[in-house]
Length: 294
Image 1: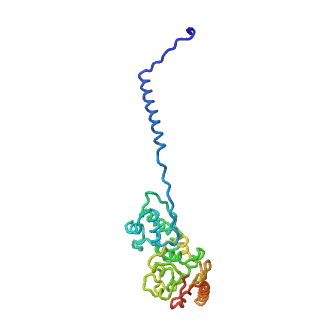
Image 2: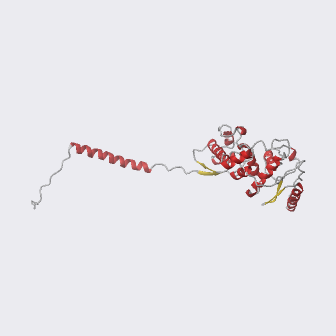
Image 3: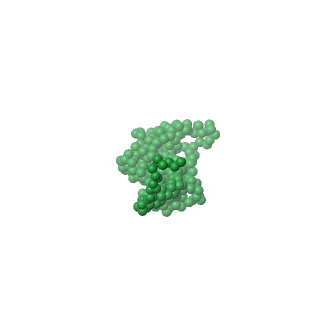
């Protein structure tokens, strides 16, 4: 039965303007539809790896670590160091030793030996420029490079970070008295080793880093010192010590007199003998070359 009581259905017709609006809307809608999948397929940002440079590493150790991290042939980073235009002081003469600051660095697929070394040097310069370190260095008449050099000796000599200030004081006291530093760490650097077994023959080698035979700081830093060592270098613990020796791990003895130092060295040698290790070469008196090292 026809629904005669219903009004007749009228079919609406789009005007030309309406058809144009619908067409544009359809195009815009399709644009949104096609854009969404593209956004979903964007690559996630690369998550950096972490490379740790410990305190006290020498430059060759840092170079080898970068080569391993970037999966490069051995020697790649060492070669890059000579052409990387690093922000080193003129005193360094292009040698980054002491300025490859120990810290944790991000590594990505875009990292290169030059970029990582530059980051380390920038970090070293930033720490050497902190107010405490910079002002303390000036108070002792030291350039930032000399501060890095002294800090590197402290870093190499200490058995415990708690002794950094005392080791720094020994160095300052010896420099003030024009005494050779006589640090085993500088001999180790000259000989490319790390040991406490210093012999009389070692102390007589003709080498710029032999601080038994030459006065003053070594010509360059001998490792990568951290901020604590830098701070100790410019703010040493008050004291009159001229000698120190680490008798056993965690037990470093500081002395103001040579006689007291000899007693500590004797105890060190007794402990070594008990462990079946040859005794250390005896230290000479201050005028002849006492050995304050560990």
